[in-house]
Amino acid sequence: MDVPMCSSPSLTALGHLYCTLAPTSLLSRPGYADYVYQQLRARAHHSVKGQYIIDPVLQLVKHKLRHRDHPLILHFAGDNGVGKTSLAEVISLAMALRCKSAEDCHIGDSTLELSGAAYDALTVAEFRRFVVGAVTSHLQRHPRNAVIIINELTSLHPEKVMVLLPLLGRGSYFPEHPQVSLRGAIVIITTDLGREGRTRGKNLAQMRALIESDFQDLYSKLSTSYLHTFPFLPITLDAATDIVRMGVADSRCAWSMNVTISDDAVAWMLEGAKPYLASENGRAVIKEVLAAVEPLLEQGDKVRPYIIDVDAHGHLALFSEEYTV
Image (cartoon, rainbow, N blue to C red; front, side, top):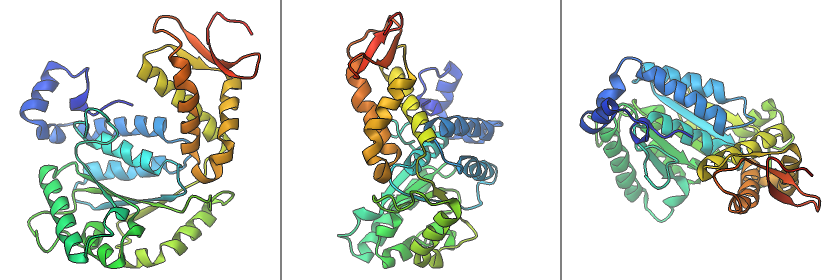
């Protein structure tokens, strides 16, 4: 996946000057919204497989890029491992100018992550002081491209959810900081429906009904005119196949090697992931890819082209492309 503009190793001299001396001016340059949208589109279709919701989400973000003061709250709901976090991270990187961390560029510098499960030990007053301070400080640093990801909002006590209501569309600012507008941020809520594969076999209408039932109390508190809910469907076999090939392609880039994978090897990996697909979906596939591919890549070099295939003994193996089975 490409890194944000100012973290790119191919940054031009002029781009480096902008990123060093006037990074925020890039956000208002002509064509910047189109640039972000194109980056977002390419990253989303590469990173998230088997989900119908990609293009509708992208259209909402595109509108947000042109109308910065229009609130946008995205709710990604579904089982574990179906792409909710991946799509949130894609939006984060597309909106950012730099990586949040040079060591692990999975989110951008303009993203604040909050976890609903992390604040159980705080009183409501303590939670309010922490969250209001963190959010307003972040928005002051990134007034034009902030992304706020709230993972597992339903893990929060209802009184703590009430603290967040202005951020979730029920107000323009926190009472403590009326000078800091909340409307410029893209807010992304992710909620899991459990590890037991509750959505497997359900169609889109049944998924929506399940989400509305599970989050009825939450929805009654939020401003639904700004809230857009997207059910993430369970991973299909075709999507799992795409995820295997995507994982190998990503490993190829990480290892700087010329390597492809055969159809038989893809089927071999999917067989290994099957016991976990119901509960972990795409996450199970990625685990299988990493566990199987990385030891093989250690056997190769960066000069010859390779292919991952199944050998005569039924094991996954790395062959030079001139091999014959």
